[in-house]
Length: 627
Image 1 (spheres, one colour):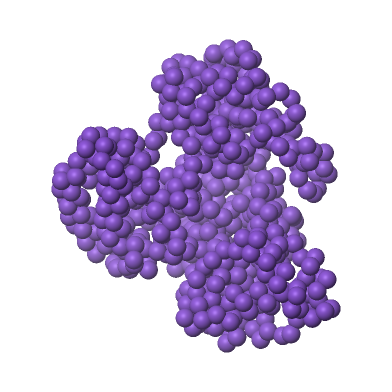
Image 2 (image 1 turned 180 degrees about the vertical axis):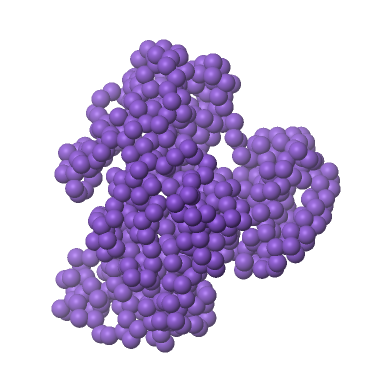
């Protein structure tokens, strides 16, 4: 039912702050906000506003671009819960997935010099390969170009140079060393090969050229997506931004960009240093800053602000919306220890006591380090094991992927959901709903009624066959004591799931991966994790639980923790082993380079800081003594 813009009210929350209301109603806006301010929630409310009021009229759609697949899925899930009948009118995907889809669907429109005749392969070049390429072409380049080529930094060549150069429909001869290097890169990787090799920077440039060269496609995209959202906008690269301005110029599209201008972490990949300033300069100075924080208590918000002003002196403080539990315990504490084992023992004892008192799940705690979490895992595992708890290293490798990414992956969730439905009869409506919803998206296009009826029958039949296979393949001591048996069972089960999900189908590949080889990597990671899980249990009904290991306390790097929420967080290893480059980063100007993190990397073995990151304080236990 359509409502007027004046009568529309936000769903799922009590109210929006003034800046959010203004940004919600603005045609185009740039919204900045700190951690816990509800940036993704704002986009969900903005989408609801546009769809429920009819401002975005059917069959028009909203294009929501994120930088990570899990962020794109998170936004889509929120909309599915809030607007189940209209969620399909929001196309939520990553930047790379969108540009790749343009090439896959409309590649025939590329100008003749860039035509793809035999498909393409996605491959990524490391810094060593780029350095070898630059050294090689410098020896063959015209004399006047060689000095300039030698000055090109391999680390920035793809992101800052190839990504910054718009392709010409009819290429011309280079007039500088930089242009010569770009032309040779395209010639060797793309134009002189029957099956071109591209990475996502190159796909971006090709997609921008394709759309720029096709006025009809330009018009179709702008009519289809009159409203565009971009999350984590601070990490936008030059290539992505020029693609945005080319495809969706200010005169044709209403764009909402959201992010935290103090959390730019993709500088190494060519992220703009001033993305929000660039946007407001090009699309109009309609900038809004959200000031509420729905994640942390005021004491934590105040601490965050102390760091924020180091990064941006003009940063305004946030106001916590969290209701505190007055228990007399400081929400932020610093603990110092002489050894890593003493640190692990104290942290483990604190968590065990807090769980006993509060009743919280172990998954509500997180252990975070800057890097090298594998070095920290043994002492933590031993200490937590002594308290009857376990640790899950989310930074552990499964083939080419990390465990934390595998456990959040949509394809992996589908596969383990199928195992769970087959192994445990009944009582799992949420798992059934998640499995059928994902399968329906991956099936070839049919009417909703046909998909529903056919899919339910097909799923029921498959689960019946899988249950029979489980009976024929028990998990017992024979499996555990026979060399290679767990691997063989994991491979056999993975093969059955692969066939059922129809991962050879092009539609499935587009749903579950940006690259064809991603499917292979995910299936390998799933099989490795499944093999590990088989060694931990003795019944099929326990496999999914062991696979997900949701009762463990997650251990991860700071980078991997971005966007996640926990009740209590421990920052572990604040010492020279983890922060070995800190002394080089200190006291640089706030407007450029690396900034001072505010952590004293020269003091002691390490310090550990438990920080309440949820909706209530940590336990009432007193501070443990320093070791």
